Length: 266
Length: 325
Picture 1: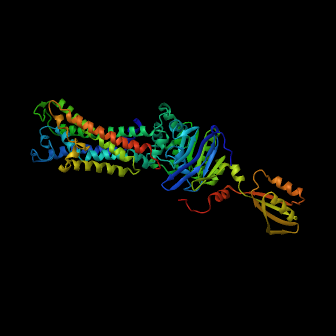
Picture 2: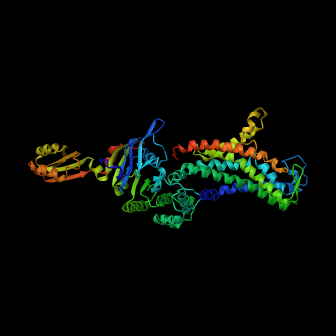
Picture 3: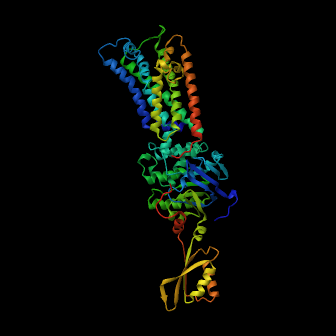
């Protein structure tokens, strides 16, 4: 496991993606700071107008902006690369004859992808917090329920939102892993994973498919508003976790079925 | 052909091993018998099914039919118990280009649950030393030459003491110097009791380092045995110089040799006769001479030329560059 994480995080690509993610809140903060026009409430991404009053909103805004595309993009790259990347390098056969064990390899690969989900969302949140503190005043935060919380509490809430989004991405990671067992071409698996995340979000926006919405893995991706109420409502967190767990089980079973019987010819 | 030894003495044993890809049989009912302690040369032209067989032996691909035993364990059922004792190089080396040579070995070693992490660094250093790569241990594999990657692949196979080494084309991409080093490495490993199963399409290489040979052609194992047996099974050419041609032909045909007069050499003291055939290893050259002399043939010159392994190989697998498809 340590070896898997070290391979993931010693790769230039991983750091490039995390840096790109960190650039999103920096870009938002800089744009708002440098713009002479005050941001009109209700325009642009949620909370954008609150940034000038309270820097703590930079992180939350950046997370909301990254959820639909940037985060799934990086998750797609990492999760799609898991098995197909090793197959493409040819290292898969050497891992298997070590013997690493096929099930063990799948579990470790998935765990590493999950760790990356957390690292990615925390990167956005942390870079946002940093930019916010440096460029804007920081003060107590007014929640959606109207209550006001202190700085410490609001940092905690930001971390909760990051965790919520990391959990949201676990289903997509499992799908990426499953697709990755079907091919030796990592780029194909990455693209397919990313395309699926877009398709799921598009379907979620079609009212004609309303019956399908609660079953889409992206359905709760932006549903973390409940974490900004006092007291916190955990219902959406639970629904989301349950849905993601379902996807992990289904995609995991598919990956297991494919990979344990696969002829490794790469 | 060798007699089938009891299974305990075989490092690799297959029975009717087959692998089909859709309609094409890549491996077609082969019965391998690799004795423990041997250096087994697995010969065959490109595309004859060597690498596919190796993949089946190591549990990378599932056989369509047949049974495999490696080191006494049934594959792939006992894969987890067998593979830690097997070092391998399959279809060329493969590494993470963005990691150093030493980091690659550490990574692959940690994939094996049985490999002790406390001795890992020492074992990696030793393996790199053994293949002469210590100076490049910290260099990224991206910057390695093909020969260096090949050496690193062999180092990986040697990370732990192994009972069996499976080396697929180990000298591929190596310069003559490196080829010689690999040969002496294989010999020293075999001297230490390791069974080495080495595939190659280079005959000279196999002739120089192997004790046993198996020959593949279009998915079938067409010959198997000790190097000596395989050579002896080939045709030998006998050159005889004698004035008593008719008597000589009679004797030789009794021994199963076809004879014809050699047109080239007519001497005053007799004629040259060239015989070809398979006398088998039970009929020694001296026995042929004794039989000739016993029948009153005046032998004035006699010589035996054994077929080279190359001729034998070509006669088994066919001439030309056609790759079995």
